Length: 521
Image (cartoon, rainbow, N blue to C red; front, side):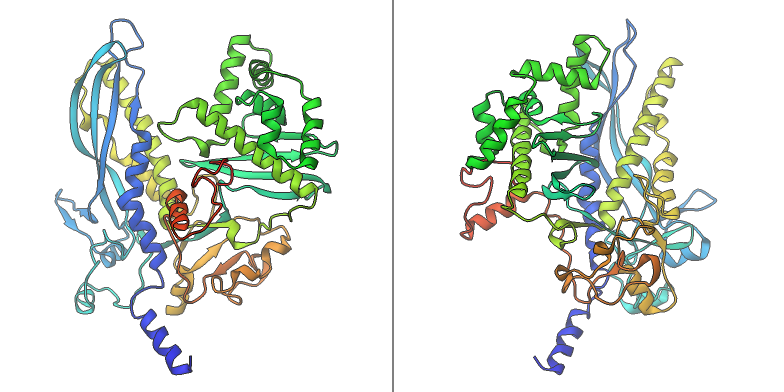
């Protein structure tokens, strides 16, 4: 391809505003699908009304959620359409009202349910991205933009909060729900570790399967102090017999030998004994019934939460968790026998990017939880004072609004992250484009992290090899390559697997009767 051809391809590629396209696609998907999914996860708001005798229980059911286009409420009470330039000049937030269907329901359990009040009410305001599908200037031509004071070549992709232009930084992180095997950095090649960041509905749990110097496997996960013997844990999950545990890990003779050592050292031989042993660890000093209840709660809630699926029986979920742990154990043994190399954390196949829509989904989830707690409090207070329970009187819209606007205004995000939202660099036009296509790593700036800062071969065509700051941020703050396209919404990998199988790809886990359905996900 000669220079003129390259120029025409480049001109065609950038003829549409594609430089902030990843922000638009992600945020539009959040408005169209992500918000409703978060509301559906929440589904109901439970209350303590009905705990006392003689009272009917009350709960709130959440329905459809929708966002309109940005509006501003004037001093006389009227609402007018708001344009970005007006928001900048008046130092106000370019945000749109959010409406949600809510129903207050009396009854439940033994009592027949009766809907007290159903209405669509305004629950708060959502900051809207400039240029997204809900933006008031979406679809305007150059003349119309100039008429309302907008720059026709402005790329959009940022928010206006209290008059300031804020861009959400694309965040780079290790891929969730994927097994990564490596040697322990602290102790060298003696100890092998298989880890996975299990993520579901905003909750992220690090699960580690470690092979220690004695060759014994131990598993650690949140809410359990220290580590638990691997065999004890898989028995608690429903894999009881020695033969089944060994078969699920591997049929390789050398790995079987390693597993037999683990089985000899096992403290318990039955599922009941394993659950009891786990109960002693998670609730020591408590009664036996409480220990069993707590042990079951911990393995259902905190161990590999990404394997939970709506409508799947708890027993099936537990077995899938046991199979997944066996796959992690196999990865440790393969690493010890040099059958595989340690996974490279800096390889781009092991990374995932959180764009504007993903970050807003995390924010909306915490904001909705805060709103739910406030609605619960308001309902209980109104009931105590014998007032009529109506949706409009128990919803305070400023609760959600504050939780959505404040993090964008300050950059302090949920999960203790800071610097997620930044003031748009308006030094020049190229500065704006560069800022919209910037990418940040969660690693600490004060640590060396030499390998993470290095240019990796898999960044070819994805990350710019030269545009990175000097000093402490070098290699941790990067920029997308010029013609980079970001794939999104590949959340349900079953569809992708079926597509690959239809093309003739063989040996895909979970397709055409392959044994370990969830193991290699």
